[in-house]
Length: 220
Picture (cartoon, rainbow, N blue to C red):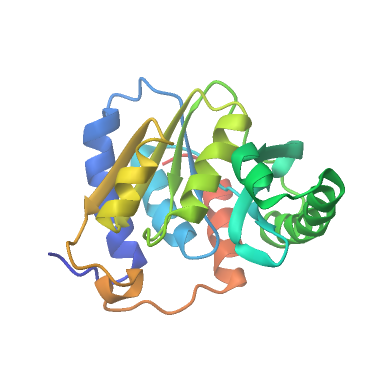
């Protein structure tokens, strides 16, 4: 199994496989969406090599009250809300309680959108192929929510692309995304960071700088 040098290296390698899967002819109308923060440096390399626009997909999971690690849904920009009714019923979450969680997470989502995008218009995804990119998949909960939100925002096709992931989580994500592109699925997987030589935290300013750079240069 390959250990990536850093997220840039991982993005370049991932882009090579994506070009094969999506086709290098440019027939598909592709938008690349990076999951902040660590997914954005990977997504930047992917977008550049696919000659596609880059944006972030900002989501917030809706955690069950008193059990916040259990997601009962997710929200995204544009008023998109995805709710798992089965979990809501099983945990007995009332409509007012769900709305309270949504409002709290909406405030955080709005703050992050402003921080990362700074007033720039979100790249439209309606009717397009959306490639959701992260630096890896452990539990898959965030990636799952991102794919659901992208589809709810109008994406015609959702492709999840990651350099490395847990085999069980990747298998589960194939039921959510139209396609999952993963460079390697190690049998003995403990954490995403163990597959990188350099895996420091990606600061907000780097996310903003990459988005601004992509916006200035345009696709490719």
